[in-house]
Image (cartoon, rainbow, N blue to C red; front, side):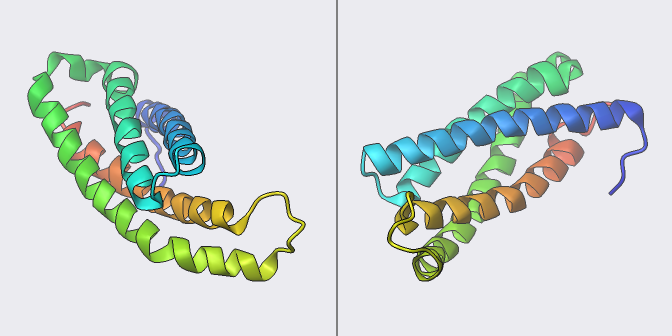
Length: 151
């Protein structure tokens, strides 16, 4: 979908910047939980994704869609949370199906001398794939439901 409206294009860019900040938070927390605290990868992913969602909601409300501050907070955050929970299920489903096969795949293509282990690369590749899919879900669901009444 090509965005021709300059105001909508600006919103999409801001939404993307917010998404990048959420992704950094998501991956940072995910790797801290998994690598340093030895949390199971799926539990780490659910936790990191949830923290990132909260970050994204605040920044989208305040910066991407500042007009939305005039709308009822609890209704809007409820809609955002519903979209995010569905996104969490999509993200977790894709992640849980792909992280083990990606570990096996990276074990086959990397040598033992590679500085990052397949146990780190595989889950991160799975997280990247899941994040890309959920990015599209989150943008369109939030734009056309949560923030639909914003011109």
